[in-house]
Amino acid sequence: MRIGVIGAGSWGTTVADLLVRNGHDVTIWAREADVVESIRTAHENTVFLPGVALAPALHAEATIGTAVADAELVVSAAPSHAVRTVAGEIAASLHGHRPIVVSISKGLEAGTHDRMSTLLEEVLSGCPVVALSGPSFAKEVAEHQPTAVVAASDDIPAAHAVQHAFSNAYFRVYSSGDVVGVELGGALKNVIAIAAGILDGLGLGYNPRAALITRGLAEISRLGHALGADPLTFAGLAGMGDLILTATGALSRNRSLGVELGKGRSLEEILAGRVSVAEGVRTARTAVELGEAHGVELPIAQEVSRVLFEQKDPRQAIQDLMERELKAEQWR
Image (cartoon, rainbow, N blue to C red; front, side, top):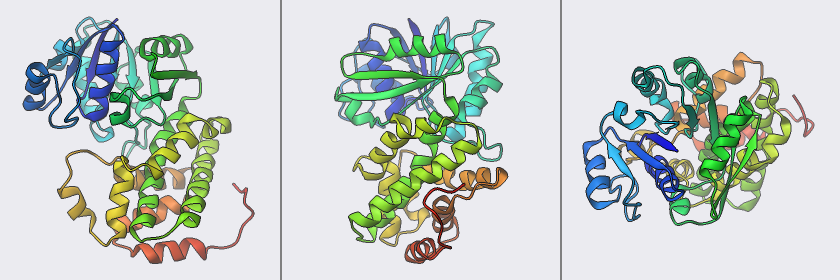
């Protein structure tokens, strides 16, 4: 297939390299000129994926139009806050043809509360959209470690096409028709991962982590149920699988940000020293707003948002969660 990957962060670059190694003709677009140059000349993304040798056949371009020209499949890999803008540039470059669009960004749009597939369907009208999500650290996929993810779409043939395009001996893709569940799981797990990092930064142990992950999954499932997701999705790769990975893995940007918060550093200090995006920061506040709009209480997301944006003391946030009104374990 002729494939354009739009966004050359660590995950976009890893996916582009995987697709080239699967035999596809792949062009990756990067906004940063130094990233384009390093991929072209050194076959390495020295900014976002240093130390990983990329397939020499991977093309890099500085213009979106060149990257998506005649593409049968377009991968949207921009950070969630930039997806609408970048999608507009893709739309202006398609000139009437309608490729399958694969969203690999995990987040919710501020203001609209849109999931990424909803946003892409709006901007790229007529293009089938597939959401690819699941437990997949870019570094480990780049090292060809066995990984399993989910391709979800309302257009099942499109999901199957993506499943076959991406799958290989180290990257297994399952298909799903539950786009809502797959995308919510991928977005909200980042918020819970920040909370898990805060626990670690405070020096707390395994009991708090187990409680947080379990109740975090319940929180994600409650919102998913209200929005029409299949509850079983949250027991799968895009739910429990991705949550466990991101909340416990040392490679998790969201967890590591939480660790620094737990150690007493401010959000501004942490973000000033980072190149890559921790999606959970923006998603926390948006998730709380989305929950309020649908009458769903998200206590963990709410406390994470207060720690991030209201400078609430993390220990007080934990205490407030523990001293909430007592409830049955399963409640809506």
